[in-house]
Amino acid sequence: MKRIALLPEGSVSHEAVVHLFGNEPVEFVHHKLISDVFLSTVQGNSDYSVIPIENTIEGSVSLHMDWLVNEVDIPMQLEWVYPSIQNLIGNKEEFMNENDNLDLSKITKILSHPVATAQCQQFIRNHAPQAILENVGSTSEAVEIVKTHTGQGWAAIGTLLGAKTHGLDVIATRITDHDNNFTRFVLIGADSIELQRPSTQTKTSITVTLPEDYPGALHQVLSAFAWRKLNLSRIESRPTKKRLGSYYFYIDILEEMNKLLLQASIAEIEAVGCQVRILGCYPIYSYEKQNSEVQ
Image (tube, rainbow, N blue to C red):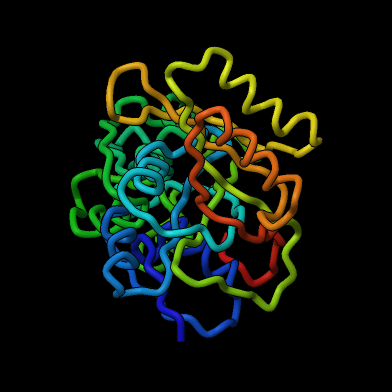
């Protein structure tokens, strides 16, 4: 049975990977910090790690991207997208007024992962502007902290699975600012993995570091893909962390690595002095809403 490292039980990562694998036999290994999720697979304590890397509203999860590129050398093995549906969670009795109506002005603090909090700014401004916002490592951790601090007016932003896991009430459902809020996840590990469900497409992810003494190098990189009509679904610059103003480019290409056109593009890029690193060639699984999933 494959062991999969991920953020705590009840987190969006947990919901997402349950949706992905369905009834396939896997064992989940939960960790409080994303760094421990990465290191679990690095150190051989799990076969794969679940990493959220991009969100509809907030864009790239920079910390996780930097770990993928700079801290570990583990290939991506598959990708899938899952809706990030956030809810306000707590002990409902704490927020009822004398007329037995819900009064969110009684909330003193809201805890969550910073990405989840950013997804719910409109709700917070409209319903609980007085609340102190506190960042924690995951939405599930936020729910767990609220559970252990009853009577203080604390609430958490998290998933329905998180509320169920820790036995708290869902005070308000679907509080995200936008309905089309999705998160992109990747599964990283040493070995490829096949699922029973069919994939929709194949993607290759690379990083390109430009030579410092070659004017027009970025144009050359993009041209190498363009004239071969290769579809780039994402291109993003990130600091190399070596010196100020030094960047590499993260690029997703909707093509298999073994195709000659892609191999020729990479060879052309390397010929002008660029450094190319292959992060993975992997299947993409589309989101399929299931009646049994936790929403």
